[in-house]
Each structure stands twice: as structure tokens, then as C-alpha cells.
Image (cartoon, rainbow, N blue to C red; front, top):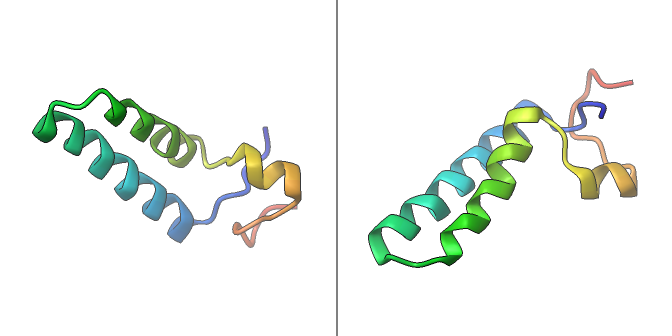
Length: 62
């Protein structure tokens, strides 16, 4: 997969993923596992839905 997420996009995804995971611990909820999706997307710098639609926030991507 090609990288299509820019640094700001990666940081926002990482932050939102960590907040959702933290809410799982605080509120003892099972829904917190959905925080792994933006977290993994931030770590690999690729967003599959953006790749399908052709959106690139990474300016250095070809």
C-alpha cells in the first residue's frame, strides 16, 4: 500500500485512536477497540478509504 496520509493527518488519527482506546479503559466499554482502526492507519501512513477515493494528504506521495 502506498502512503497517502500526511503528517498532520497521521497525528490526528493517532490522537483520535488513543483517545478512543483510553475511553475504553475509563468507561470499561467494548467499543474502544474501534480506536485501533485510526491508530493503525496512522502508524502505516495509509488510509484505505482515502486510497479508494484517490485522496492524498501526503504532498510527497506520487
